Length: 89
Image (cartoon, rainbow, N blue to C red; front, side):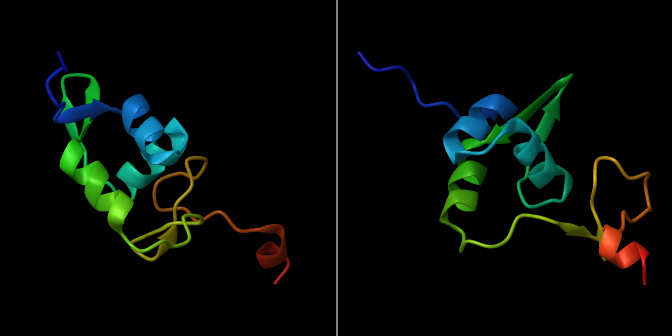
């Protein structure tokens, strides 16, 4: 007997399904490339969203842009981290 299909996946399960790390899935969620919902403290990704993202044309993941600024989990909100080459300009 097969188990019923899941409609919502935890971040870890979504990462396994997409072949990414959990931190990459977190980045995709933060930048709006992958939609997720929060239920209490849990972040859940709909199965349809995983399927939609997996079918999209491939594109470069890093560095993502949010509102024209480079996203970094090490940057403060609104701050852009420069590469060493950019810092010397």
